[in-house]
Image 1 (tube, rainbow, N blue to C red):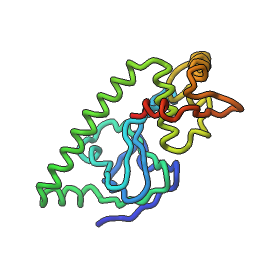
Image 2: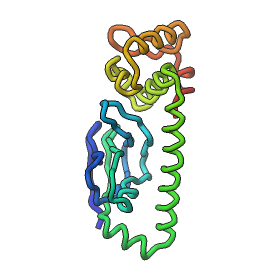
Image 3: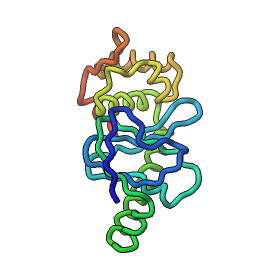
Length: 191
């Protein structure tokens, strides 16, 4: 049985470390998956748009669940309980193949993305972070403190990178707000 659920912007849909008994099918809105760590930083690892689904991996794994899913915009999703999900998979091999394909895709792309992030410079991490917030539509709310958490870099490094980006005409930080100076240059950093 499908349950219709609505979520407000910035509302957490799935909490990291919590047991989840549902697979969610996103019908409206955008949601993002991220991995929080003990230092208060996090890495965005996946963007969900209408027609996508999440929560399927948790149905097969009873251990640690590090991924959190949050609504970027108001969302409408249908939730299918684990038992109904497994019954559906038993009855329809095409669904089973689709689920396995999606899990494999997420595992491969997320591990590549996390490896790639670990090799980025502070400037590249900052620009990617700014580009992601621009895409989400909340760039005006991005503070230096938030940048510090998201890119895991000291404020002095962030200030140095922002000054360099200002000189290059990419972005600046004025009146406690990050301002985009050249959208095309910034969008080159979107995942």
